[in-house]
Amino acid sequence: MGVNNNDSRGALIVLEGLDRCGKTSQSSRLFPYLEGLGHSVELWRFPDRSTSVGKMISAYLSNQSQLDDHTIHLLFSANRWEKRSMMETKLKAGTTLIVDRYSYSGVAFSSAKGIDVEWCKAPEIGLLAPDLVLYLDIPPEKAAERGGYGSERYEHLDFQRKVAQYYQILRDSSWKIIDACQSIEEVEKQLREIVLDHVITCHKGKPLSLLWS
Ligand code: DGP
Ligand code: NA
Ligand code: NA
Image (cartoon, rainbow, N blue to C red; front, side, top):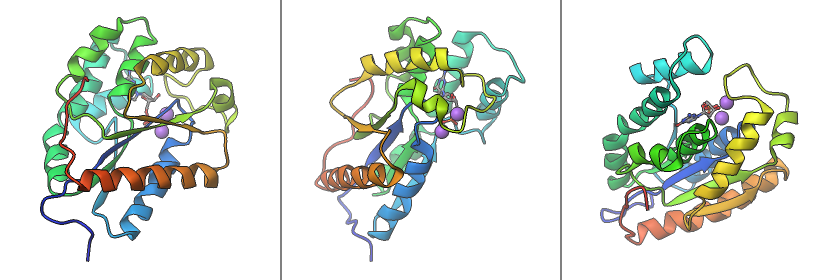
C-alpha cells in the first residue's frame, strides 16, 4: 500500500545544473528510492524530445538545424507548456514528479547567449513552480573534465561558464545547493535526505504555486 492519501498531492522536484553535473544519473537514482518507500513517483525530463516541438529542439541541439536564439527559447518554453496540464493532474493525484531540468535551464541557457533575463523569464510565467530545486553545483572546468562533453550545441566550457553565472542570479528560496564534486554516493545520500523532507511537506497540504515568484 502506498503512503498517499486522498488530500495529499505530489511534490514537484526539479534537478538543475550545468551539463555533466550528474543530474541525470542522480534523478534516475532518486526515482527507485522514492518508489521503494511506497510513494507514487514519475521521472520526467526537459526538453521532452518525444513531442513534435521536442523533435525541433533535438534537431537544434544536435546542430541539424539553425534557429534564431529567441525562437529556440520559445520552443523550449512551449515544450514545458505542452506538459503543464499533465503535470498538474499528476501532482494533484498525489504523484511526485522528479524533473531533470526546467525553467531555470530555460532562462540560464538563453541569458548566457546575451538575451535579457526578464525577457527569458516571461514565457515561463504561469508554469507550476517547483517545491524544491536541487542544484548540483560543479565548477564548469570540473564538469568539462568528466568524460568530456559530447557534440551537442551548448557543450563548450566558455558557454557553460556563462550559464553558471546566470544560474547564480536565479537562485531562490526553493533551491538547495549540493556540492556535485563529491562522490556519486555522497551526493545521492544528501539528495535522499532533502527530498524525503520535501515530499513529506507536500503531503501536509502545501498549495501549488506558479512561476515566476
Ligand atoms: P539535456 O537533455 O539535459 O542534456 O539538455 C540538453 C541541452 O539543452 C543542455 O545543454 C541544456 C539545454 N537546455 C535544456 N533546457 C533548456 C532550455 O529551456 N533552454 C535552452 N536554451 N537550453 C536548454
Ligand atoms: Na547535455
Ligand atoms: Na543531462
